[in-house]
Length: 171
Image (cartoon, rainbow, N blue to C red):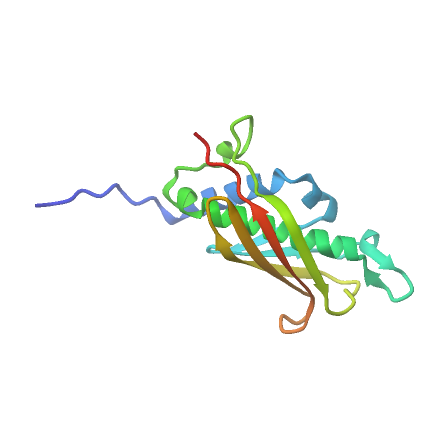
């Protein structure tokens, strides 16, 4: 007895679909463009990058990144990671395409319930990086932890925990 499998897609087709889907997802959040954040993808792992911009300085005497810019950066990293994690299997199988993330039937994003930031040291006037980890994700609720660093991954300048309401599944 032979089982027929669907033909495998070329690796480049899958990578292009992943990249295009991530770009479409990021473009759904205008605040990401305001901060200048972009995402680097390695497999299913995302790293958020916030390039330094003088507009992000909150205290010019130190100088230090503005706390609101830091919190916003960590929150968008959490929301994109959470949504990306939810979409991963559908993107891999081709059930979700970049076109599915636009228009009236677009995939909805989770809503923030609370977001608590621990400022561990001043953010310096240089690029910042963040990675989020989904601690729990159910049908209605999700919990995400985010770590932000600049030059050295082991020296965090901020970390955060967020709780989110998950969107109802599309019908």
